[in-house]
Amino acid sequence: MYWVTGILGLALIVAPYVLGYSTDTNALWTSIVLGVVVVVASLIEAWDKARWEYWVAGLAGVLAVIAPFILGFSALTAALWTSIIVGAILVILSGYEVFFARSMTQ
Image (cartoon, rainbow, N blue to C red; front, top):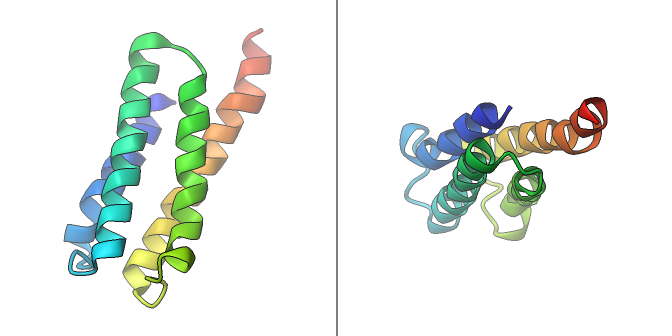
């Protein structure tokens, strides 16, 4: 499942440029930084097969969901919904991997 989170991380990185909100500094850097964190966590998961990386990806997802409201870019519709949707998917996938997939493999 790490490849799905990696793709979501890449989506966060390219979204400001593709969806046109790269002019807003808060939205741009939030998306890039959280995307890089998710991609790096996914690459580590691919290499190491540990489980803590999903905690990091889940935390990044939570931060992506709340960031538009805390950092003040909730008026940018594309940035708001990209952040909320990708963040929510990250939380759901990471939560599944941490709480359900682990118990199924043990």
